[in-house]
Length: 483
Ligand code: NAP
Image 1 (cartoon, protein in one colour):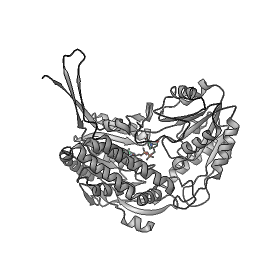
Image 2: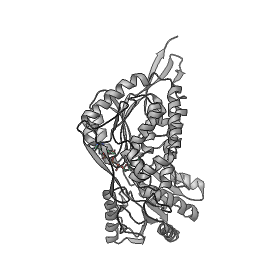
Image 3: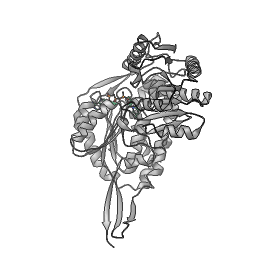
């Protein structure tokens, strides 16, 4: 069944409503991280292909912006329904190329499709504003225009949701897009394009360009005057490069970048809530999530109980091929990600850290790492400040909450944070002192299409989801009216 799914999945570039080979005929391999075997060969876009996609998106923009908000909304709603109808197929593809378990992949398909439903609803209610200046001197009419042609670049960890979180608001606003998916996971993005075509998205409105030459094609697109916006999700390192490049032509930028989330457990925490929330915040997608709990700060009066219970629960998780029944944790996405986790843990252990469970890769084919809990970590260890992106919980005790908050904020990142405590007033006051765009209180799951998702500091610029996500794709035009 999986073989048939891969064979029938689109593998060419999607430009102007056509499925085409790369202009130089080149392709690249996509692998299954559970067995390191090649899944498929996918076309690898060139700079020439990229400019063809800009032509198509620019031409289609004239047509798409003439669609009424309702007409666009109905297509988005249809896209939501098609994703739901094809849940199993999309989830299997995600699991095959990214590694997450089938159950998690089904969850991702739900989350991803919700962006189409949410922006189908939001897009028809965001039509501008009419105000009068306080002194009565002026009538202020604010019209909303689509920004124009947008370049969307997505990471591999949520191959469907990271795409729809950008495509849905862009299309609702009347923009046309060129999506460059991560090279680890292009198949899901191409399948989305097929579904969007079926939903009635006109040719050229959505173009998808897998490519192993990310910087070549993005530089070509960013250099084209018709490109008006870049919306990027990925590492802070690449985000900085793109911001610098976009600065040359003052291109509108939205950036969803890396994280280093603190998870603070206060002395009055309900231990069951703390453990459940920690498991969700740490283990979603095997820890390969930008909002994954990265540093656990636990009050010293409960740190032993928390550590041993978390280690017990993490030790019970079954690691294996995400498509097999009964598996809780799939493989990491590739060898680089696995090697980075191995290095961080080995270095911390060499410096004196203690491993309560896990602490090593699995001795089998595939990029599997055992769920790991660590304590006694010296502050000089790299793991203290690095985005781990793997199934490793690093625990640090604290006595003074001011010190824990100070440590939580000692990072260039500011995406997500978690606070666990029974006294909600105290938990809220701790939360409001954390420099992060997303806070979970007494829960580990925080993603929601209706909420503004984004980071403080070097975790990004702008928000995705909620009405805010739509405004990222809108230019406001103010007209002073005399009547
Ligand atoms: P990445 O290496 O930054 O890659 C992200 C995307 O950028 C991929 O499509 C990649 O293409 C492309 N890219 C890489 N180098 C580029 C360049 N020089 N110019 C233009 N594009 C380039 O990140 P990743 O490893 O895929 O994802 C993990 C990172 O994403 C983590 O830091 C995580 O925290 C962050 N993330 C953030 C959010 C959020 O919402 N804030 C969500 C998910 C992930 P190739 O694949 O072809 O190299």
